[in-house]
Image 1 (cartoon, rainbow, N blue to C red):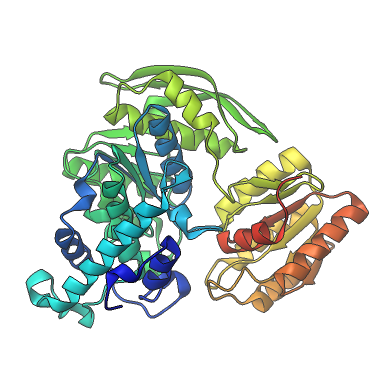
Image 2: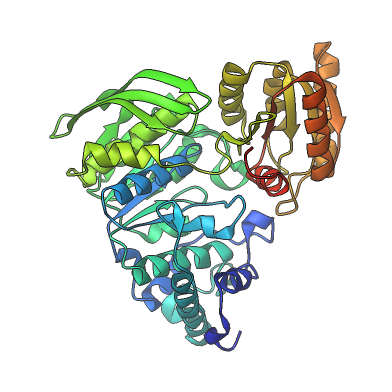
Length: 462
């Protein structure tokens, strides 16, 4: 692109950014690094410093925590930019004001400036900006440009706060150029082991990279090896540590098909002493009460004047696509982006509690996932399991998934009927037909991309 003025829509900006190296699509790997991202931000005049920032990392729940944080701030009257990934149905889900899209003019203006910055980076002596000899890489990546686009949008919109979710890891994630008002780390589990390490402690070390000197850290309950890493890093950085199990108590959690109700008590060793009764989020699941508690605790460390009314209204009005989302009532059809053993287990626990066991599962996941562990969790809970393709955005091998599920059923004895229907549209039709014949609920899980495919092929909730 020779002229940034060619952008006339947010879609055109996204299409241009999508031409750059993108690990989400499984394109060629380039080492994660912050010098190039810092160079881009410097050329842009450091838009990452345009407003106080809440930085969220973790393996599970970080999207919900980020979104809840933004929703509460918006309810308090603070214009808040939110950064998340991946998107489910619309790329603008990655860059929003609270839970709504920015005006198109914001995306376009920020996109034009972004293109100008990239042109300047290409024309400048790379060695003067960052170590271009490292990995032979002067060209920015998709995620770096998406991240800078977000910061530029936040600045163009004159936002008063930013809620930022890491893409992967933390230490070398493009978002980690920020100096946050507070860092939040959700539950850690084995994920992206080819990049982050093969142990919980190694992955925790990467996530701990978002802890900044003197800035508070709000930490979800963690396995012991991860907790040790976080405590050590927080002490090294002189970062006040708010470990959720030590300073907050969730009570009276009630999960229904309409959402989750809970009470929360926060009492720390300093000035935070808060109590909330019967808070509500329209996202079902005990885990969503935990996510909400983390968001509230994080906000109270940085925005202590946030009112109880803002907390209530923010949570009550917030939803996210593909987080135990009911997209149909007749039949009950739920989609969830769960794609690890732990997250699939939590999803199935909520699903069977609310809709019973023996339903229909549509399952598909990207290549490289722990298929066998997820198969073992899924098989006992369904009467029919349909293996399909989770869209085309990421590489997947549905035939391998089908083989793993089939082998596990043969090994464990009588189990659900396992069907292999690679076309997602045909898989949905089969699931709906089985549901009608046997009066069964349906769950689609295994990938945010599969959830997006299902959402795009079904009519609005009815």
